[in-house]
Image 1: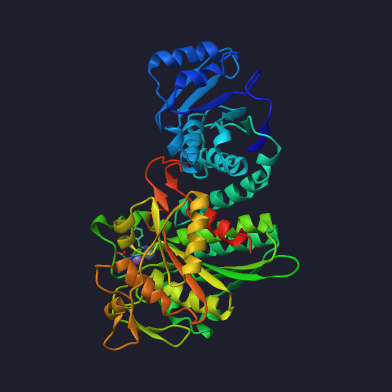
Image 2 (image 1 turned 120 degrees about the vertical axis):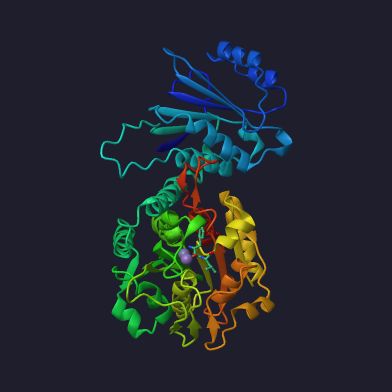
Length: 490
Ligand code: BES
Ligand code: MN
Ligand code: ZN
């Protein structure tokens, strides 16, 4: 979608569809500003329908032989409650109704209530992302028209200063959505590695893929134990972005990359929704999506490592047994008391690998625990970190992106639950506090002097219904937080 500012205003605007945002305060007065325009008679109508511009209210009109052909009026609620998040949701609710309409989409909001550059960016992202459709797996996709152009009406010059970031960022989110949405017979570990190598070529990143043998010689026994029950070979992916000139910040992003999680011999049964476990590579999708965006944005002063230990968790005659003891690449032995707690095993070796690069900070993203979904639901991801600074910068990055993130505790006493009678540690603690013991397990594999944060996206990776800026399906959660975090000043 091509995005631009239109400083002229509504007069004579002749695009295909127009979204008008109104505040709950005095709708009549706001409508007066349109009296001069061709919209006035139509908006007259609105007064009669009892539209009160409450947050989330949407009214749409179709005009046959006029331009715009479609007018969508969205309620923004009370001005004192208005924020960027409401702007995003309202833009998305309006834009979503334009699936099926081609041409130019215009958005007219009370921009003056915001810092214009961030409002413009938020609305443009929302419009682009809510119109995403995935027709890759249909034989004869219905021709799905959507607006090719977006105009933010009533904004000028300085408001456009972040707009060039919108397309790279959205492309990163869309890549993540496509990776997560792809079925597990298509998006195999090898396919994920190919995608990563392709990305690296396109955006000038360094790329390296470790094969099973390479991982063996590095002693990645935890990761390989998960992969050993599958016919598909594991692929350990490492991309690097390095900006030109001096580098002052070195970061690593690690993503859980289970292209399918059957649970292994602790097979997922009953309500566990095994068929959804193609989304168990949502962390790695976010990391590759961020690589895509950062590769195109080319932020200065940073080096970023993108790391994924990709594999499948399956069952066959050589699959890991519940009860097996394996050794991670730092020498720690792990008793696998539950083969369905596989993500943390793959992440253990990935975090050891990331730590060896000695970055200033490591962030991992993972669809790690059902317990996190129970705790925070599907709109908020959990954040664990011992570093207040790192936690703060991630929370700020998420907030600016409009992604829900909530810091959770890491009490040392809960490590008790991971004590093994035989090995250094076991991979699964008791059910209560299950997302916390998972985070504590990961901490054991991070280098001592390195700042580290873990983000559990088990709830946010997917949405069953259209929600805010996310169409039903894969959300691409995490990409925008990671990009904001990497690109922040200093
Ligand atoms: N991939 C799952 C976590 C998950 C569950 C994500 C539901 C999204 C929705 C993970 O590998 C898993 O199976 N975790 C277990 C851990 C348990 C065995 C300690 C879980 O959460 O049940
Ligand atoms: Mn599992
Ligand atoms: Zn899993």
